Image 1 (cartoon, rainbow, N blue to C red):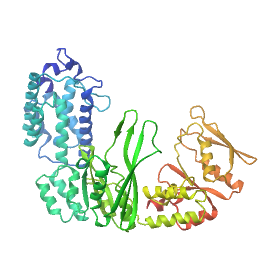
Image 2: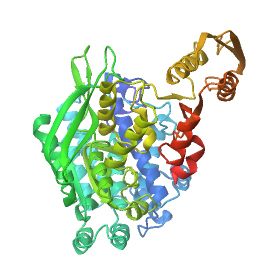
Image 3: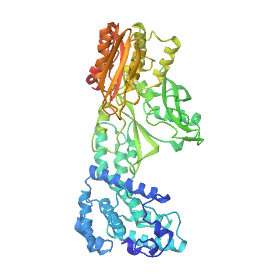
Length: 575
């Protein structure tokens, strides 16, 4: 169809020479290429969600819809077989599936192949059509919209909506228009009232929605819910935050957002709100300066702190990047309060979506019990909250008492009072999922590293140097070296001396992964040297190795009193 109703200068088959003809379907980068690719990428992703999560019924059969498409001269008889094959791949008889199949038919008609995200690029050039030419394009696009409506693939309201966009000169080709139509149709089908009511009943069953349930059902019937995040307006303990509702200066918006978040649960009310903007030196470099917020407030008579990301600054471009607030971290200061209160609730982030893309200016915060959160982490849901820990054992008081015990058994004896206080501040600012996180804040106690080695010059020599550091020179390795060569060798020889005794170990080079025999080797050296302590692995929850050097007495005390989580306790920790 598109090849027939578009002006000649936009058709691949036309011999008319113009800049637009050359650019219309070229496979090179241009201004419009990114826009169109984003349209289609979103469309493909949304269709995936549609097919996986929904079984939409539109009261039509494939044959009757195809018949309408043929009668309206949108599809030619010779294209029917291809169209049917595309529908089979879609595995759904939704309007969006028909429209997407139509998009592919139009694309193939003009290019000879189907559209693919990999290796296919669309460009419509930078030059705008002249007024008369755009008017002709608009007339033909509106005729196309009318035919889609006649085939019941778009509603009257959708026709009016897209007719307005066409008249606003937003499109020059059907392959620009169709993806935007499909995106809206997918969302409309996804927000099907019958499906929304089923989810509303789920929310009611776990008392996530209660007092506003009737309002929710009424608004669903009147199709007032436009996006999944709209459900939060009816939840018992939730807020939706739009950054654009707040001033641009942190001193004006930061406390306001925290106040709105705290309003979810009365016990989260606070006073004495303060904040600092600090450079994150751990990840900054000469051309990437990362800055954090450090927020402090007083709640229930106790002071709390939280560090979260603020802005990235590029000195070379003299430009800041980022949103007003770190949506994934800032609210966790309130989860520290809830843990101290032994509350069954935790705050969770809920992302907003525009199509299938995250809408970063808008997000939700909801308070849930573990049972409620488990429901929303299952299937058949319209929003998924962030995962949070519901353990209440790691309270502020527990952390303070544990740090004192660390001091009493000598774990922090190598540090000055100033270093200890600085580490305590770090503990108060970060999220601590377990006591390993607490102890990690103190310098030269735990050495954590990725078992996918980052140092590909002398990784094992570096590990030995770090082992020496956390042993506080009890592990007195000297003349440390290795001949690691990831490109030329299959093995590496690690060498060092302790006193007059030389040690060497051949280890396998398995790309950039550590040879786990390294851990056994270092322990055997410690045992042979009859040192006071030994190296132990701690639980890390990932592919990182977390190593600590402890005397037997320290190890027994920490393990018996559960003041650290050791590597062989991972099942208990994850439960």
